[in-house]
Length: 142
Image (tube, rainbow, N blue to C red):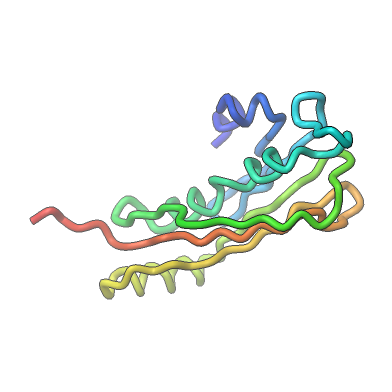
């Protein structure tokens, strides 16, 4: 996971994974010259980029190699200007992953929704992202 900080789009945008385990990932986005918009606040594209892959990554790790997990749709609400560094924590509880696994094992195509909030240094929510994923069990190819 630590190598994701060297992924060029994250590196250039100032996005850093600062904490992770099997259920949770915390990401920080500093406000820099490279991700500042015309108003001197966080560029919306960078705010979204910091939220993009993490629910898929967490769910893939919890489900294992026998499942397909893709992003299907996403939306972001910008609630306040980001005037400094911001953070977001992505969490997939084991019970939720187990429920998704059970439904996939029953042959369903599941489209779970996950939500995360982007907060500033004072804890104010500046953006909310919603991710719709697509999950199904891999077929054996027989």
